[in-house]
Image (cartoon, rainbow, N blue to C red):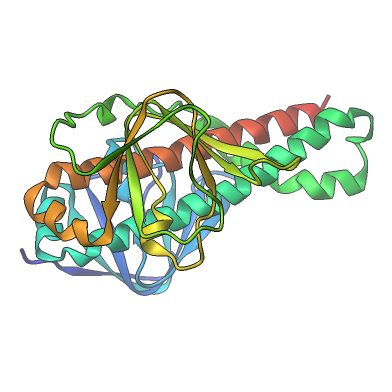
Length: 297
């Protein structure tokens, strides 16, 4: 396939919030800002995209309208990959599957940190409503109020129906009974997991008084991706939440075979990660909504 590098000038809109996605991008030079409400009176910059990072992939993987606008910061060069050529792109560049898994995994990790922070603040708000009008308290929660105000029209539940794919062709699998720890926060990892049956909870500080549950996953889901992408140890503890929880184990060396032999499974893995990120973002915004409404009582 032949891919063209596109060039954008400072301030030019690369992706428009609300559009139907027909392609995704790999940033090769320059930087780009990710904004909600960019064309309205209260634009909010969510993130900055650096060279080597993908953007716009979630609209392709899940067939959702664009959730944010992406604006060039200075001159920007980006490779545009049409949705219909995604599988071919990965077949010709199999190493890019791991790059995209890493990209999505890093976004999930950052969003998990934000979600956990919002969980702690929400607990504090609920416990001390009489003090929610104080200036010091407002300074702690103003980011969450701003995020809710900028994204309150984005609280649309993501649809998991597209993930209910045919998983008859399986790799190595393990089964766990309810309450079993699949891996612990801080453990070294060399694989990720595809949840085929049952449910799995993801926790920070599991087993302590500070335990926070960042996600409850149902089949079909992908988790533990940092075992493939990071040498820093697992970022969460994964616990089987129901009996006969069954997972497929995927090692880094398996990815090339999956790319060449099962493009549908590659798409499923990427869609699962994209859905998990979208689910985290919605849960985070719901916390921001409750923090805002409690403060404004």
